[in-house]
Length: 112
Length: 114
Image 1 (tube, helix red, strand yellow):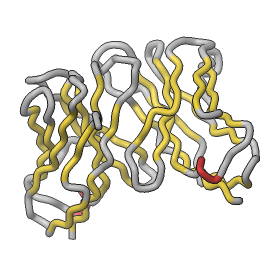
Image 2 (cartoon, one colour; image 1 turned 45 degrees about the vertical axis):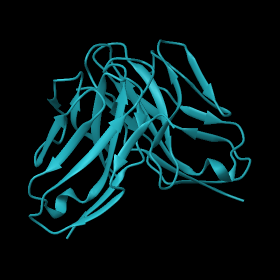
Image 3 (tube, chains in turn brown, purple; image 1 turned 90 degrees about the horizontal axis):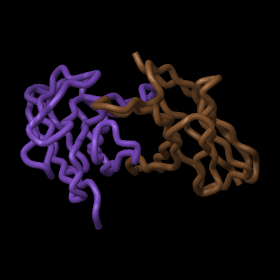
Image 4 (tube, helix red, strand yellow; image 1 turned 120 degrees about the vertical axis):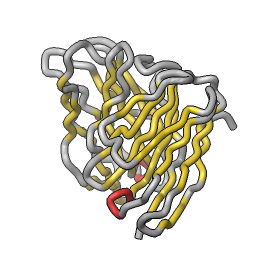
């Protein structure tokens, strides 16, 4: 079935470090891809998305590019802040009546 | 504020008790979902409702029932709670199951079964 695999955490970085969280997917068709973020004690929020190959999603300094050839959607940020500490989920959805499929999440801790 | 509202936020149950988790959205979304979140497991889909009047099983439906009461409301019922159902439950909604706008999530219900 369709699935998403994320790098395991936790990831601990110093403030202003470069962030990469790897995400790869397996899908029977051509999915739309998402990154969600969950801050402590809260629900998930959509961070960014890409709906077709080579699209780049971006928001709040985060970026991810839909790479069909490597079935990947890695999340990057050039300079992380303490406020970026959260759990990040990669997810996919196929067209039609199939719900969102999530990866297991990656916890990021940024220290000052 | 527009969004997805879940009640209660916290609940402790004894094994064998029943309860209903409530979810309501005011965005005129067609589809609604129930997920559970467990450490190391990510979010797993319990049930979903693609449109008013329909419900479908997700990845982990055993021990749960759902009701799509109307377009706004989608409840999750535990008939006989078990410790394995200790989890954080999230309700979500969007315009359609295949829609690319993403989902809107509630803030969650933290359930402990003792």
